[in-house]
Image (cartoon, rainbow, N blue to C red; front, side, top):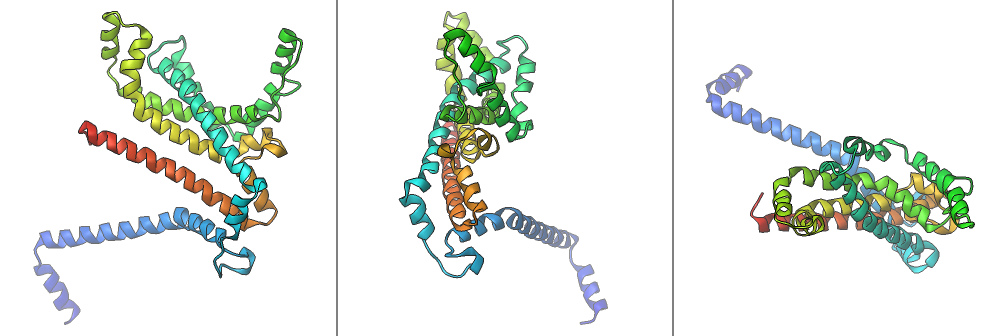
Length: 300
C-alpha cells in the first residue's frame, strides 16, 4: 500500500474513531512520560538505597545479596539505639502536638485569641526557616548564655539549661513539626459547621463538653493525618537536630549522616530503609483508617 492510499484509507475512517485513537495515543504518551519522570526522580533513588542496603560492598558494585548490615544494625546497641531514640522522640512529639497544635489551630480558626490571623500566619514560620536556624535559635534560647538560663537562675537560684539533653531535641522537633498538625486540624475545622457548637452552648453545655462531644469527634481525620505527618517529619528531622544534639543522643538521621561520611554507605542505606518502612507503614495505616471511616460514613 502506498502512502497516498494509506492517507486515503485514514481519511475514510469516521471522525469519531480518529479522535478516539488520537485521545488514546495522547493518554498513553502522557502516561509513559509521567511514569518515566516519577521513576527517575522518586523511585530510582529510593530503589537504589534499598539495593545498597543488601549489597556486601557498594564500592565493588551491586553484585551479591547480604543481610549483614541489618544483622549488625539490629544486633548491636550502638547501632539500634538511634532508631529507638528517633521513635521515642517522635512519639513524644506527636503527643505534644496533639495538644499544642490542636490548641493553636482551634484558637486561630475559631478566633478565640486576639490577633488570630497573625498567629495563624506565624504558625507556618518554621516551614519557611532553614532547620539549622531553628536549631541555633533553640541553642541560643535554652543554652547556658540564653534567657532561659538567666530566668531560671533569677527565679530559683539554680540555673537550668537544656543543652545536650533529650528535651532540647524534643523541642527542636516540636518547632519543626507543629505547622503540620496546625494545618491538618485547621483544614478540618474550617469545613465544620460552627452552628452545632453554638447550639450546644446555647443549651447550657460547657465549652469543654462541647469540644469533647461535638468538635473532637469531627477532628479525628485531621488529628490522625497530622499525627502521621508529625511522626514522619520528626523521624526524618536532621538540620535542627544536628545543631542541638550531643554525641550520646544521636537520632537515626544523624547516624545515617555519620555512616555516610565514614564511607559505610551500606549501613547508612540499612538505616534509611528501616526509616522508610516506619514512615510508609504509618502512612498506610492512616490512609486505611481514613478510607474505612469514609466508607462507614457513606461518603466518597
